[in-house]
Image (cartoon, rainbow, N blue to C red; front, side, top):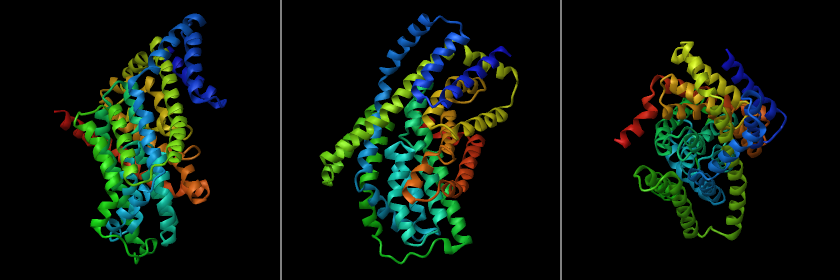
Length: 434
């Protein structure tokens, strides 16, 4: 019972400090320090010495270099006309499917996610084109906004994924295998979304008016899609063939993006300047949270909290299904208030040992966790995709959340299917590693 009280004490400290409005990275560092002093009965001098060594070591992690590089890649693409080409390139392939070009939200987000790694960037980049076009052509506003909110969250699951990089660093599992594990679940969710759009369009054809406008031929559309497809092949090909690590592949991706933009005569000093500033702001935030999370992980390990809590939960003899249900509810609640990276770094020191103790594969759990985090992207009050769409559409946040709710349920269904058939996540990394 004592270990449970210690865990509750740490979680209470986290919620109290973050509830005071303290920045996440400093809040986690404060909680780590207070946990050692108040719960571990460690002197201030010794606690400071322990955490300072961890601070230096975690800040010099080579894996962290992939984060700013993938963010830079997405920022450069965001400022080009590649998103416009993405829409026009997908249009000929979707206009004859029930639901028409609403499917460009799903397919466009899935493709852009494969070169971005960010949910908000995926939603904003695809949405800046599709929201205007779909409204102009008379498509149902709710279905348009909801499908974009749901599909934009694929930026966290389909590789390269920033959250997967964070998870891989913390859990010390192969980031390449995590990337592979995210592919088929991403396809599953995209399929569920498109299937729902088809179902709604068949039930009520007025939601999706017939397309009358001239579009490019399928051959021309492939040319329009070539920049995005090229980047996907280059980055993912470098990782999956073993030519490059995820960090090295991120550098390759940035180089390839610059070459494409130069060839298209779109690269400018202003674009580089804006992309670099945005990258600096985003990557500083992410990396500082990761470093402070390493402090919290160290404090938890010093207190033996994860291992003892895992042993305690194992002694309760919970069924694996009940454990996953409890964790799902826990992460969905966290998603109401925190962003995905904060959720991962804050909770993993406690939940990962429990999951491993229960016999779950850490790579599978990484994918399961990302799907649960995706749910938080489309739930108020802190759903980042909802905020992005509110800015793009001018709709009230409540209306955007209501439109996204069916896609929230579909993502819950995907998580349930993944629990029933874990091979959806594990087959590809196992097949490619043999």
